[in-house]
Length: 135
Image 1 (cartoon, rainbow, N blue to C red):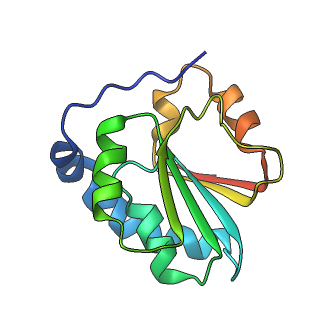
Image 2 (image 1 turned 135 degrees about the vertical axis):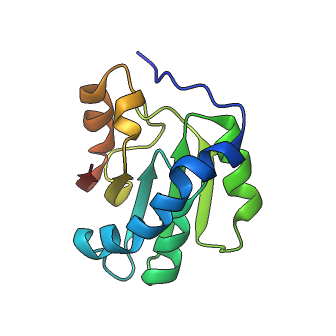
């Protein structure tokens, strides 16, 4: 079962959620205990608040950010200036990665609300060694 979330405009999201995501992201990264050199998956990256905060806050080896919304993915790609960051469209309920690809998977704010099958998304996110979610 796939995710269900339809977005028409990234700017509207930024006004509503992005401003809060930017404030919460550094605190969440500290809470998660992200370590240098890790490969991190940002599940439901939106326009990139957590993704880009990760790039600034830690010397991670690689950040892969996924979102179901092509509008968000396009906006996050447009904003990206860090070569460690890869952004792509993907469904959190059916991640296109092999097991063990990431050291940890992070999800910020309430993207779990937009999923038809939260259990499938969490199970899929276990392709990393540690899944951290804070609501």
